[in-house]
Length: 261
Image 1: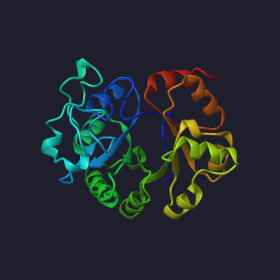
Image 2: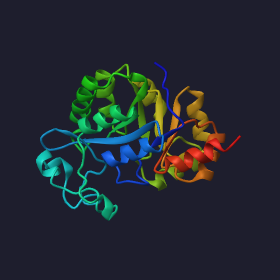
Image 3: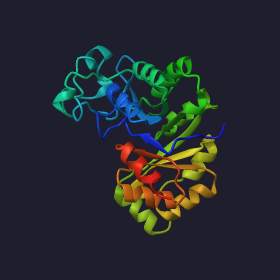
């Protein structure tokens, strides 16, 4: 089934306006009229899929340590909103199931990024996709992505009929820029895409050169830049043939793109 995406996808829900990867961020995106959101999924120690980005709890909660070392009960004791603003104090890290309930309630599409802690690449994909497959029916409103080859292989085995893609941009900025300067593609994205029958590549907007975007489009693969938070940059990428953008400020990028004729 061809990958169908809206022009704008809210990054980590709507991270420019609400704490990332929270139910509040999902609701905020929906209230803005955004049709899809991107969310990250990891596993707790007791193998419950939760919506969270980092391996460590420190940056976005009042807790500390590895996510993989905490049970869901321990995770639920944490505040993941106060770091963002006092008005969000008391917000909890949601489970994947809770997030799906809100997505279905608000009629939103989902880019679910499988973001495993080290050593849990296969388990994270299997547990998350098993839950997702039992609840989610609309395949044209779902895109599965990951930077992990192991997670993507598991996704291909479990959900081969769902749209899937690789996340690029995990290497250091210096590695990427050096590769682009030498007229080389930073990662063997084409081999990986063909092997796993991927339809898209999520790529940090910073590395979306004209050369790379052209190569991706020539292979009938959909490039999806993320961290697109500057209106001028979004317009430039649109001129290169980009049709879908992931942004922390989806309303602003949406307005800028639709204002271009």
